[in-house]
Structure formats: structure tokens, C-alpha cells
Length: 295
Image 1 (tube, rainbow, N blue to C red):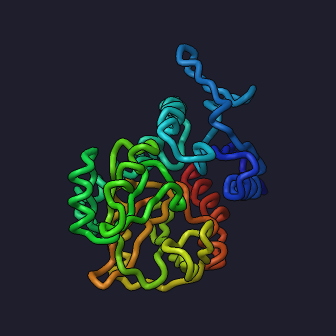
Image 2: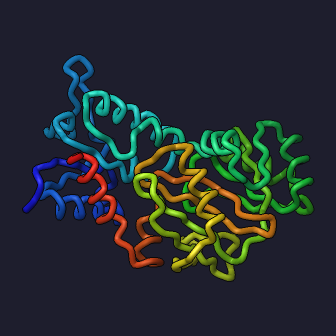
């Protein structure tokens, strides 16, 4: 028998993970609604929010899979709409203020550093001279935009080859803040350590294409199952505990100096778990949300 709960999905119409989560919730509850935040309106005086003609503030829950098709600062404004909806009593998975804390790479990194989570050597500055000095000390490094996913916009640089020009070009391409991170020696892969409701679920590996410096699928990487050590899981748990997300994938790498965390994601993990571990994350997440709302 289907439950009577109404849980909608905030996502991208036609997006693989968004549609999959909407399907999984429909299977659990008999209700299906995929919400594009770009078409949501909030009536602050009336205390209601609408997607087209559907009243979102009458829902039992909202699952946030994607806030928009691409990472950008504008997504922070969209999350404020969800904060309004949450204040009207709708349970949101994960809470918007917690997603805000990881959406910006710098905010996420600062929070992890303050919690003592091991990170790659990183320098953040607007000063090209300071950035150049950091990269000269690091050796080969990666410049990372503050809003990005799947390595989009990241630049691999070498202090022996046009360093200042590369830094200037990175700033000129729209990156006022230079986020420079030492390129680490990795064993040809990094890991996605996944937690559901704060509990460890599974780990998948992203195995790099031999012709690419990163492990993303868009550059030929592939997913594989992986059994991490207890130490890797403990570090990933420490990282995810900082943010308290309902579903999260912690990007972590095993280096000669020990495991380090790259970032904590509020949106990733579905495809990696399915293709690498044969785990249907959408079904698991849908079941978690139903259980939470029924308890």
C-alpha cells in the first residue's frame, strides 16, 4: 500500500539523478513532483510558496537533488526560497542552510579546516604575488573555481611553466579569489565515501583515464567498488559531521601522507553508487525520507 506522504524533488527536469529520485519517491508514496526552483514563487505575506499552481508549503517534504543545472553564486539565492519553505513547516532533505555551507568551495574548505579535517595544502588569496609564492612552494598545483563540479574550470599549473600568466588568466576568467591547492600523488583514483542520515552507506572509487589528470567521468574516469580502511571512513565521517547533511558524498583521496578530504558534496553519489557498488541510492534515500517523516 502506498503511503499518503507528499514528498517532491527539487531538481532538473530530465536530469538523470533528479528523475531517478522522483521515480523512487513515487514508488514509495504514489506521489511524484519534480520542482524547478527557477519557476518557484514565494508569497511572503501569505506565507506560501508555489511551483506553477502547486502549493509547495502544503507538502510533507522536499528532497533537494539539484538547485540548478550548473554551480554558481545565484544558487545561494534559490536556496533562500527553500529556507522560506522550511520555515513554513516543510521538512527539507537536506536543510537549505546546510547545503549553503557546502555549496561554496571556500566556505566548505574553511569549515573543514576549522574542524581539523586533513586537507591538501591549500592557499586562498586575491593577491597574485602571494598565489605565485604558494605554488612555487607547492610545485604542480590545481586552481579551483569556488563554484564548480566535476573539475569544470579547474586548471593544472606548474611553477616552471608560465606561472604568473596562468594565475592572471585564471583571475581574468572570473575568479576574483585564487584557490590554489597542491597537486597530490594519487594512486590513479579517488573515493566517494557516502553517508545516508549520518550513517556510513558505501564507498565507490573514481578511477582515472590514463590520459587525464583528474578522475571525473566527463574526462574518461570510471566508477568501481571499493572497500576503504576504517581510517578512511573515520576521516570521511569527521568531514560529513561538520555539515549534517541527510545524504552526502565525501570526496577523499589516499596519499602517501595519509587520507585527505577534497570536499563534501550535497548532491553527488547516485551514479557512483549504482555503477560502482550496484546500490540504488535513490531508493535508499527515498526510504530514509519516508521513515523520517513517519517517525
